[in-house]
Image (cartoon, rainbow, N blue to C red):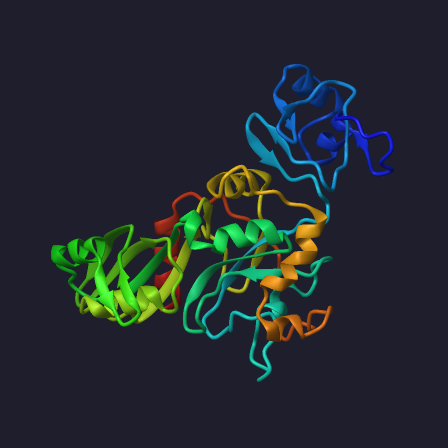
Amino acid sequence: MSHPGDGRAERLQKVLATAGLGSRRACEELIAAGRVTVDGRVATLGDKVDPVEAVIHVDGARVVIDAAAVYVALNKPAGVVSTMDDEWGRTALADYVAELPHRVFHVGRLDADSEGLLLLTNDGALAHRLMHPSYGVAKTYLAEVPGPVPAAVRRRLLAGVELADGPAAADAFRVVETSGRRALVEVVLHEGRKHIVRRLLAEVGHPVSRLVRTAIGPVKLGGLKPGRTRRLTRPEVAALFAVVGEGAVSTARDHAAGAQARPARDHAAGAQARPARQPASRGDATSGSGRAAAARSGVRRQR
């Protein structure tokens, strides 16, 4: 695994320490214990790796060591369009990530009227897998609908209903709370057809008045406030790689290729993000626990 001819090659323990796995001595102990693999092989002390190209796992969890890789969570407010730049001058996603050192693109979309979790990254390989329906990455939503919601609605949604563009079904459904003629329901599904949650609930007689995405796979919205961003933690990034399979490989080439995943209008927008038209911060990290409770509280505060 040593690459003496590669000018970028560095000692594995140094690369791991730089990635935040501990001191160099602690990382040497990880390597000596056989807990580190590089490109599918168990690493040994003395190995050198390319910190841009190497695929490293510690205890089976993917460790992203490329300093150019960016993984961000955004709580998209209602009224913001899911594009990096908007030809009509509406508030767009670039307004919230203009201060990032690297250009990113969004992983999937939320319609302008919907709110909640969006992921942004420059990792093209991971983004492709997260968006592709064959990987079955679940998305979780909280929806305000007319109440009460009878048990038959859950049965219909899980069994599947026929929509104009074909059948669709929820992976999971539950009523979170009911208050008078209003209900808050949680819907989990892995496909991403346009307005799929709104169309599903309308089809069963409970049109959505407000929709918030609270999770994408293992990453939770938690207490992140609307309009705020945060960097994903190392365990969150590792969990995303795990949920799409260990074959996901992130390299500098993937970062460049990621631009192809953007809509053509975004790609033509140029290399610089627009100056922010409204304040946006990368603070407010969240633990990810109590997803439904935190989102439910947010729904109440913003009504």
